[in-house]
Image: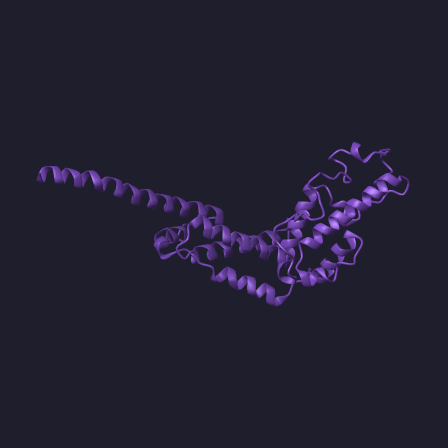
Length: 251
């Protein structure tokens, strides 16, 4: 843990540089929305928390919610600046949660207390939430959209699901086999949701000796899509000159 006054003799806030957690940019106001999603509850806590952590990391304010940057006890100027930064971070958190959650935290004074309370309350793996997300993943289909749009929707839900169930990340053999199985499931989900127009390329991907990764399969299908689009455009561009030639001969 770092004491905001123990490693600095700064007494003028204007002399703080951007590397100091106490530094506040002119745009860092309490009315600022640091992320564009709002915490609803258990169903989107992981997405919200990861988005908030990333945003606070960019702002160099993580220390105010994990307890690693303490309030100065020997410098009144830095102590007051710490209070200001704490309230700004607290406001950013409160601005990013729905009103019914906001009302339960509005009287809090420390950003770290609100962060811990929200985590203890909503960082839970609820079976119904996992079921709902997995159902959405398995029912998602391309449905006429571009291959890229379909893949990125699916990839977003995969990441949400992995974060929710906290898949093992060790390098042991059992973990590697499980991750291979997880990638296989994702490949099948991606291929199942493709439009029937890609039946032939789907079959070719499934019949090769070594099944491809999801990213490779996406790359192959995307190339097929590009080929179809260029072929379609090419046939249209050739139609007009042929018709003109026919008209010329007729005349």
